[in-house]
Image (cartoon, helix red, strand yellow):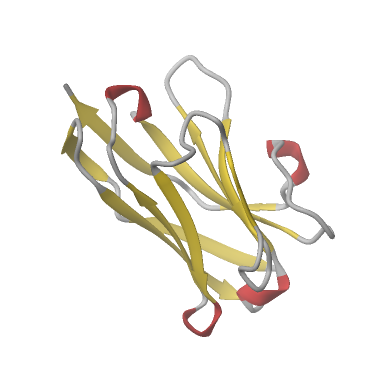
Amino acid sequence: QVQLVESGGGLVQAGGSLRLSCAASGRTLSSYNMGWFRQAPGKEREFVAAISRRGSSTYYGDSVKGRFTISRDNAKNTVYLQMNSLKPEDTAVYYCAAETSNQLRVRPDEYDYWGQGTQVTVSS
C-alpha cells in the first residue's frame, strides 16, 4: 500500500505557472503508474495526465496538452505536475493517484490509491 500527499497548490494569475508535487510513502513509487486528476466544484473528476512506472510513457488530457508536463523522480518517491500558461478554467482541486496495471489509465475508478488533493486557483 502507498500513501500519497500532494503539495504546491495555490493562487496564481492567468498565464502563470505552478508545480505540484506528490510525495509517496509506504510502498516504493516505482511500483505504480501515476496519474493526476482534477475536480472543480459541481463537476466530475477529470483526467489530467499519467506517467508510467519508469517515466518512459506519458499521456495527457486534451485540455492540458502542451501546457502541463508530468514527470517523476523515483529516487525521491515523488511525482510532479508542471503547469504553465494557466487559465481560470484550470481552477480545481488536483489529486494524484496510483495504480498497478500494465498500461496508462484515464478513468478515476481505475486507480487504487489517492492523495487528499491540493487546491489550485487561477485568477483572471
